[in-house]
Length: 94
Image: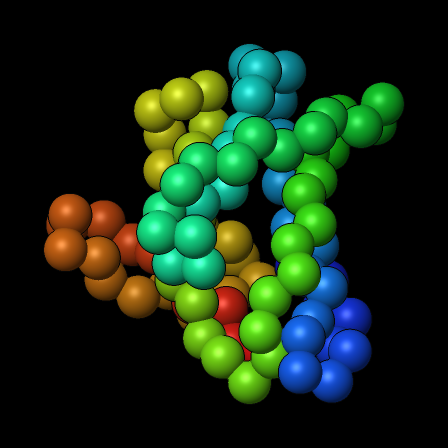
């Protein structure tokens, strides 16, 4: 799930990953905004994982979630696009 708060030239983007079961121990988000560096998400008491980024508005970024260090997942709130690794990335349009 994605929440966007546009602040003019920049936007606060909140990424929320809701696990389907209790097997999810950790989630990281990686995207084009920082050369695909993995940034760990924080787990809330309700089990959701969240992360907030300050990104350039009027831009598009590919990204994805890495679950338990190995499983790549796209965000259902965004369009999916093919990646060069024969998988899918989420496309965030601000």
